[in-house]
Length: 343
Image 1 (tube, one colour):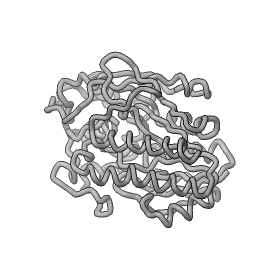
Image 2 (tube, helix red, strand yellow):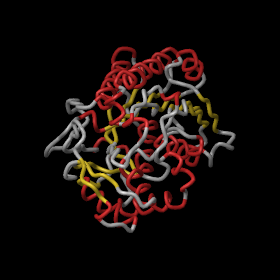
Image 3 (tube, rainbow, N blue to C red):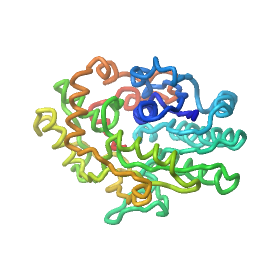
Image 4 (cartoon, rainbow, N blue to C red):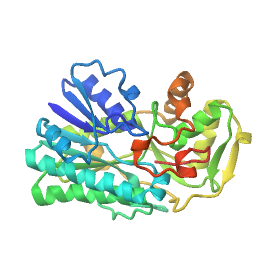
């Protein structure tokens, strides 16, 4: 099978590419714009493979997208602007990439009759849930520009199935963690800051709750949806470990050999949803079972960052590259230690 993976040089996408190449005989083509969070270093172990092709390009390039989709059997669509804090300052750009880019891929998928289109999304589209957990048919109530752009792209994808019978499946995962993650999300942000001997900032009182899934569990779930999922369906992919951000910080401190003296409580960010939670019974019926213990996975993640300072030190306070199309601002171009995100 010929698999087109958009955003395959990003954190989750690169783990997915390595998973497919190690567990199947498929050929994978990666389409990635290599903006600030995408790197060929994440694909280094598989770049020499004769079953992997890399194409640098943007999902907004209609001609390129059409040519690539035409020669592939299935599409797994990771490519997106994904950082919540950046979306506060670049909402138009997030909508353009996440919604229009998805539509262009779907148009090409319809035109060329792909066998399956997996659209990768997030639990943030459900919005905050104080006590219950969202099933796949729960209403979408995003509260931040990033989540709104993903909810819109989910609906665009599902409408392609309803209107044109494009065989779309949508996956929505909880927070991913693991090696190779760009240091703007909370776990790599805190880990790299602590390893450098710096202080870290915890929003509010650290009471916000998130569910954590190891990236390798998530990509296994996404691949199950590609191969076994029913077109037109949404599949939640959770990890089974719910933590307040204060509990998460405590575990990161322990894993890094640091203490609370290194933590500052800082003002909460806008629309910081109190809790995300969802069920994943539908994915379980496909065979999805998250297997990574959180503490063991966190220890592995810390060990990776400890062993690869060359990979993250240049990024720790790096300005966005010009081709990111995100207008730099002091808070956006340089990632301070309080630049905390939970998705």
